[in-house]
Image 1: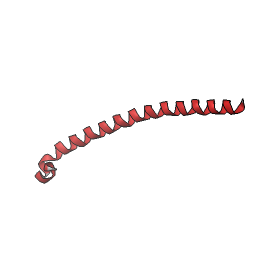
Image 2: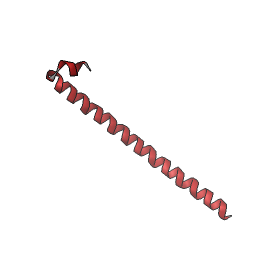
Image 3: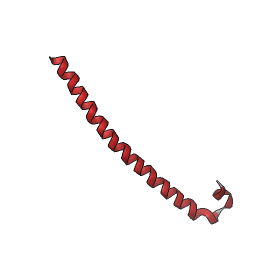
Image 4: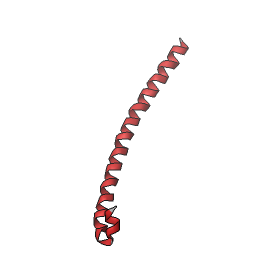
Length: 56
């Protein structure tokens, strides 16, 4: 917040901060996407098992 008050002379610092934040968010999205894939595999597995038991 102090950087905003200091004005344009901190623009480069704020830009770098935003770039770093973007990379952190992209990394988190990537991790969550991988987790989601695992969840989808388990949902499919459990759905198939449930369906097989109904057919028995």
